[in-house]
Length: 396
Image (cartoon, rainbow, N blue to C red; front, side, top):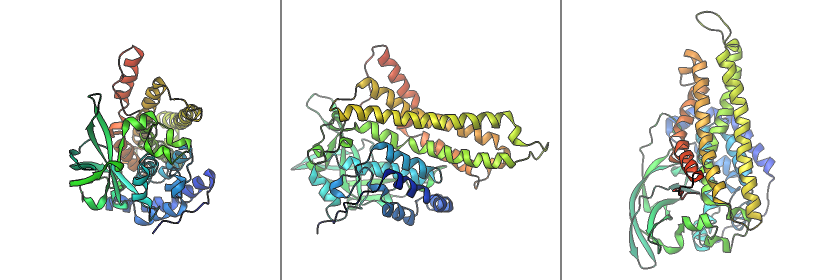
């Protein structure tokens, strides 16, 4: 049975508005998501109904093929209320774009009967690979598969030998029925992401369900034969790295709103002074307000520039990719530093689990630990290339 594909396409503004309309429910469900280590099923159902997962999905399967800017505007809007929801939206939503880079047969395997099917991932190159007729057999255990309970397929990382002698990083597409979910997610932050481990034992992966990172970086993926929209020619690393840093911007914005409301009314328990007159509280509020604008502008600037190259049929220069790579990670780092200062300005009131600032502090710092958000590492690489040293990062 072939899936029925709708041709109706909403506006970017209506999708952002739909995300904003979800915020009251997301705030009500935050504690439940953290407690159960899972974004509630009803939240994912509402995101599906609103069409949010279709933003970057191929049009052939009911997707909207919109710009990354729209996708990340939605993610930041969700994060204002619940960073766990925004995190799985960013990661899972990007997978709908990445599947569009795969061979058409892989796209049919996933969406041929139901275009709402979602994909989780762990890109750690953990696969133990054995050649087999028509593909490979893989085994391994992968960590941090965000939103896995909401998904029917998995993207799993591994390495294959390449003809130039260097290892070739690849993504294997595997049905979740070939894997076991190991419920290990018990963390200080982003509890609702349910980023559990998955284990695969001797699963067969045909050649058409393998995507090579070299193809993604060079905009030569097999899916481009059928998906002609320019968005599928964006370098893979430029899209994915933003998916794991941008929710921090929205979360900081939501925290700043709560901070303003709380601090404007707070009176110190010991001296009776108004916290709104505290220079440190004033300073961090002003700096956070300006930083949020800066970070949003940097994100939009990145994809406007990349879009210009892609639409002109030109390769995005490596020096720009390196700079954008660092800026994506730096966004998470700046947000972590600012939420820390907000937390301190709350005084003892900030230590309670029900406090928005406390929760956001834990969520942003947890997101900052993602390997893609290690800004120092990417700043050093960028700086080294400015001195004429070789680039070591292949996820660009």
